[in-house]
Image (cartoon, rainbow, N blue to C red; front, side, top):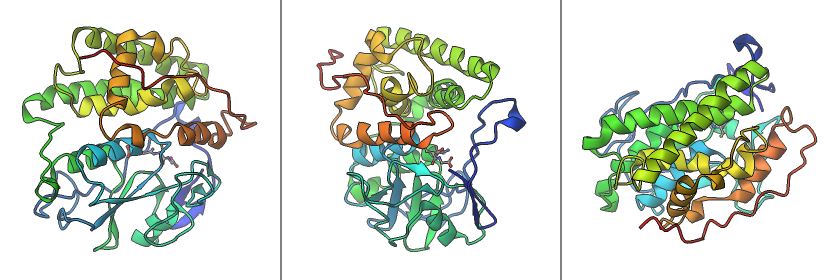
Length: 324
Ligand SMILES: N[C@@H](CCC(=O)N[C@@H](CS)C(=O)NCC(=O)O)C(=O)O
């Protein structure tokens, strides 16, 4: 675990001292957009036209943010157009590594580099900041398009429609305001909430994160008791953004991040909804509990210093979901 400072790797854990024990997530630094015609997107520069084979996605199967991008790649039929490299689940003093001694860890399929930080340095030899997954790489420009998953899934949602012919829309115009409202609460209290609880280094910081987390899970359980998906009878981006946290919850966040008031299996509607999304065509292949469990318990030695990997709950993701 570490970060780049002016092109130099510094091995250090998150600094929570400056923020009263709270984990504060860095903002992503690469915010360009692939668009259908190569025109600029909402942020960053233009010049990234949607083309088959031009872009490469760097992910970790362990990471819930990267997982979103893998799901959208599957949902939108992009597997033949955007290829993937997956890092090793252990994120230690060198950050994410391209070791291949774990099933599904592919190594760097573009350049054969040893560490993910080398990809950031290839784009900018004086790069600073955290070296995170996902990264969307542009082969033509030898540069990073984006390292922000929220943006990458929106690009995948529509930019390549002319290439793939897949026009499924998970961010429909008529629901955008409501999606934004749900996303905001889910991001603050659930997606990032589990990290704020798990990486807190004071009781106050933990309490401040864990109560809103479970308030939100109760709120979501109420919504899913009334409607099939978060925004009604149509599945949207909001569901997929929530899913990647829920998919990891009972196996890691409940124990490792001390989010243990309840498990997901204790919420009948949320658990059935989660199974439906897991069983969605193409999605189960993106879920790698082996990477998830190994990554969290083995990498965060401030949280789990002996790196003991617990036995884990037996979860049947393939049980009928009954949400029809
Ligand atoms: N805002 C980013 C966050 C990505 C992120 O934090 N990824 C984690 C893995 S789950 C990471 O690579 N962390 C490495 C680090 O913080 O040094 C996104 O959503 O794409």
